[in-house]
Amino acid sequence: MSLDKGTVRAIAELARIDVPEDELDHLAGELSGILTFVEHLSEVNTDGIAPMNSVADLGLPMRADIVTDGNQAEAVLANAPDAMDGFFTVPKVVE
Amino acid sequence: MTNLTKLTIAGALNGLSKGEFTAEELTEAHIKATEAKRALNAFITETPDMARDQAKESDARRQAGKAGALDGIPLGIKDLFCTKGVLTSAASHILDGFTPQYESTVTANLKAAGAVSLGKLNLDEFAMGSSNLTSYYGGAVNPWTKTSDPSAKLVPGGSSGGSAAAVAARMVMGATGTDTGGSIRQPAAFCGITGIKPTYGRCSRWGVVAFASSLDQPGPMARTVEDCALLLGAMAGHDPKDSTSAPVAVPNFAAALTGDIRGLKVGIPQEYRPDGLNAEVSQAWEQGIQWLKDAGATPVEISLPHTKYALPVYYIVAPAEASSNLARYDGVRFGLRVPGTSLDDMYKKTRAAGFGKEVRRRIMIGTYVLSAGYYDAYYAKAQKVRRLIAEDFTKAFQTVDVILTPTAPSAAFGMTETTDDPVTMWLNDVFTIPTSLAGLPGLSLPVGLNSDGLPLGLQLIGRPFDEETLFKVAGVMETAASFTAVPEGV
Image (cartoon, rainbow over all chains, first blue to last red; front, side, top):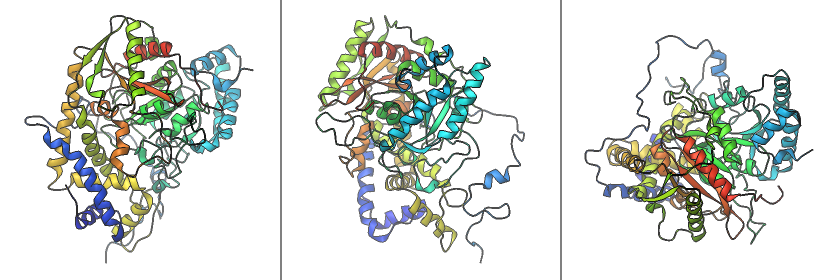
């Protein structure tokens, strides 16, 4: 699989990572190399094999639907780069 | 007084209980060692004052007859575990200044057992790497050097490279690591120490910065098998806060070191002997098989036919999970924020500046294999082959009790020898990744030095939740190997 510049630009957009235009070619080469490497899997017959999501055959545990924690606004916001009045802040999103 | 930094954890616990020295003295000796060996760059954050306070409290507990299982033992913590009030960086620029408001379950368990923390240890950024060179804080340095070129700095392996270097250099008596594809075992092998990746679910992942959630597993690194058993006993246990934490009892791991492995069947997988395998690695493996034979075990040739697909599966599954997990670094809730003209612009600038090259590469691969139109061809396919790899092990364990392989395809390499080709770098984990995909426990222990004076490790792989057999067999091999070599200056 060989990725072109446009595809890499689209992946970067999906991943929300700024990639300068002059790095796209190099990155396309690297990512294509990785994809070629993982494509060996296509030679394995996996008909009728269920995907393995987890190694633990446990199933997800259930617990009582009760409040176990809370009232920690200060701790939750303690590491925010720009918290204000008990809220996280972001650049303006509504015009 | 004896040189306190040369003791094992078991030996130090014995000395503390007999009153031969205090936890304060033991901690002070290790703080001095840490200061003397700063050139190894093993620590990202040293916390000597906190350690002194903890040691003082430990001595008081011991006086009162209330000492815990690891009371007074100075440890280092991989900087991937959240530690309340202490910078937790994951060796990434994007977590600048992140000071957790809570403690991970594993480190809380160690604290409850009385352990003293000397600080936070270096690693590959977000645990993505096999050399420690992807750390934003620079690579940790392996205390071992080649006899042919003692001035060349070697990598300690990764991602738990700072942990391995600090244990090998006698800065700490033991350390926590985490292992996603080999991140405890490969650095343990490179630095001549012992480390175990427990069964997936044995140790809680709560409060451990996530890389690939279906693979990540915390585990201990130390200088002896018994010390690893002691550490794991304190770290492990069911935790309702991690839904994948297994509700199973924690056995007395150290009690498994009986020295008796007569009648045990040891699987030797033919697929781990590829053409061109390093001759000295191969010899070490043969030697290991012979030791187990001499102790009354029976080697059995086995086949794990899907082994060669483990690396491609891993490099789909792990980046896919990483791309989801690392979506949380958005410049809003913690760490670095680079201003932008819009919300999206802020995300993109923050993530471009905050993530290093390898992390960006893996997020993008993960994003691609999960994207519409490619999910089935890559991600679902990899999950299916993952099941075949796991089933290979299940079948093998119908006839054998434990599997013996090399840990890594080579000894430690130079910090400047690394390649820009990601795939070549990933081959370091070719022997450890299959175990991770199957969720099985894997232990690496040092068995000797190569002709250039560098340690080589062997890996034991066990059935799920049968770490005891690994410790038992590793104990026998440790006695046979009598690995007493230490790096220069230790």
